[in-house]
Figure 1 (cartoon, rainbow, N blue to C red):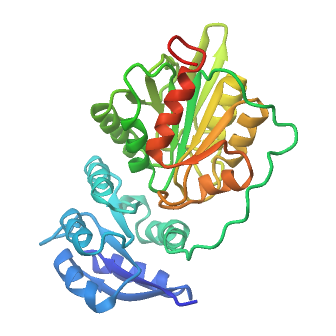
Figure 2 (tube, rainbow, N blue to C red; figure 1 turned 120 degrees about the vertical axis):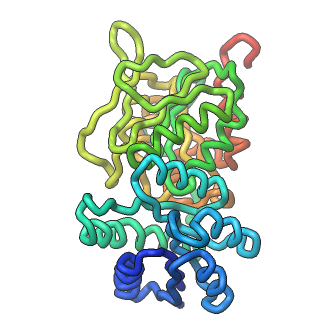
Length: 352
């Protein structure tokens, strides 16, 4: 199989060398060029014909956002991974880039966060697996398996929607929330794999753009209908039922699936608190986070729906759930939104 061809664009010569060195050490990857700014990168696109571009956000002459706009005019499907600083400005720029069509992003370690060693670790542990997932050659998936033994048939109304998302998630969440009305009769809880600051800004953007209010999770947050909570970066979000009712909580217990927040943690808590009244929604993402949580939701009598492969940036998380036979429906985000609203109204006034 041919190596994945990568073009690296960053104004730091040290960072370009670090990325190129780590990628070149992997036989599945080939660095076909580097560029110090966006203008050089655009000139090299036709020369190098990359399979994927690694693009810094902040650069002189032509920054990452402007470069991305130009790339999308001529290469609408070319995977582009953004590297940005873990700062308020970097988080905002990253979300802007995703809205403009960036495929994925990774936070660039700050100089005070371990310097070059931290950068190399991000490249090895995050960037390289991300490149391989985004450029994976499609394979024929096996047929869905039957639901595991012990799964309770799903019937009746739902009282909560739990959403899992990772790579490509912010845009998929935007499509999902675009279909939610202000009077959505159930609350929504979300585990989106993102670092601190990014999740707060994502919550604010979703809340401003769409009818359902979205907040970053905090201890003791209530779960009224038509309200959504998103797990803060580096924290698990859970729901807890006690004598006073059901509320959200956050914790920093160990990561699961190398993730914190992790969808499995959230989904298990939703299954325990809501039983058959839970609906799990798994959106685009790399890996299998959410699979065990979906098993818990289905075992409690709840239901699960997932994003389809055609609209997913990476069909890892939803694909794992679908192949395990746990998904009731496999749909694009806009249709998932319609399905959520339809199911949320079952058993309520005006629903059936």
